[in-house]
Image (tube, rainbow over all chains, first blue to last red; front, top):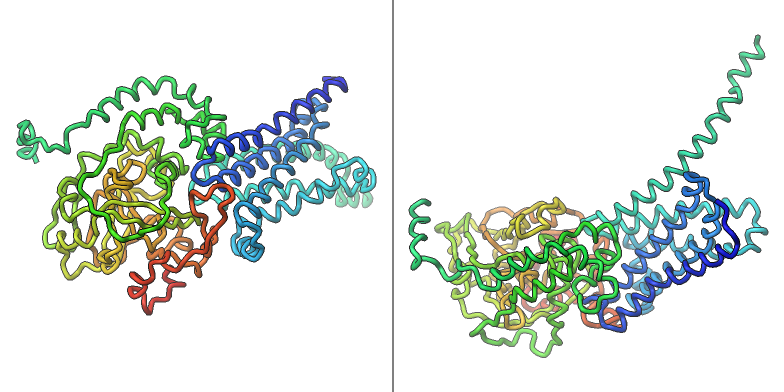
Length: 216
Length: 355
């Protein structure tokens, strides 16, 4: 399915507006005193949830291509990834500012002592180099290393799910849904990689086969 | 049993507590009507300013589309039902006390919409929405175990065991937030005295209601139901320990543990069993629900202690509910600030091990 360049521009503009909705909702609820009894927790939860959602949407562009052969949506991937970075920045700012009022000693203690915070914070740190190298200049400059670097997104995704899973006190239903989606998305990639590499291996004789061939 | 039932056929033998209150009766009819369009109501949630309870499920109802669909009764409808059920009923004849004088009270709305009560769902806003079909009357509590004589007591008789008093207590949740709540209740000590435990009674076990019809949360095996809590005898008879039946001068709303719950302000909130149906005096330390669920995270004592951290939450500071977005945190005090009244009970006990 071919798509014109102006259509992509239009789609990107639409995503921009849609991606701002979760933030607009928080502002709306905040100005109407409707962020629940624990507004800081509400904002932390909400920005964290949307970080995960954007991460999973970003990771679904390639599986869509693999399954359908449609390629144009892959152009949206960088933008979606940056929206994930936007929401994780809001998430971390809420934590550092609204939750811990910049009390760095307490923050460091919280990060070191609590496994779910360590994995979450590590995931955040790993997103920084990805966001910093998401421009065309860095893509050209890093060449093949760029791809390697950006494979970190898989590590980030797994850490993010762990962060959510370990944060939950007892009822893991919600993190389970996100984990299931990630599992499917990664599974599709692995399956296609397997399909792609299997015949290639078969076609080439193995070392053992070569040796028996030579012996003849 | 049969004889008992027959005697109940006589209208003059019907206890006042057994008559279905008008509100509950109306409420049921309303529920039947409401059940049909629950889903449609749920979709109106996203930018709602009225449905505080529903909005409070951050990342839950409002953000997880899957959960929204899974919910049979739309929160909008359910809140109307709660209002209609009209559980706000004033308690007449309780005395004010000096406990917590001068403390700034948490808002009624916060106390009644932000609850950890897994029998009505694991989200904080779930109980206010899901507890509307729960009936706190008629109610009896059975007393068992190491007592002179096993017996039961109706809620009406329990209310007469000792004069009701209002006590303002700080409530510290293990999750790192806190509230200040004006409870109405009676000291557990007067109940224990009435129950006449024998010398074998070293601990008291509290068992909560476990009715899958009116408590949707117990249909899920998220915890080992029924919810079980326990205290050492000296903790149970400590003057601070309260059997609460109300808050803000009114009978307890369902989501806060109606008709009767425990409050120990120096312990983390989860120690306070709600909707108590059975009290058992025992010789051995009871295996309590959260200890069973996570022995490395939750202990039997669960005393508020800023020096013993939890694997998930910082315990050295807490977020007071009501502070808003910019309220920040405050330092958590040893025994939640009640050291003077309770510290002597734990002299010589290693609180790092016995957390």
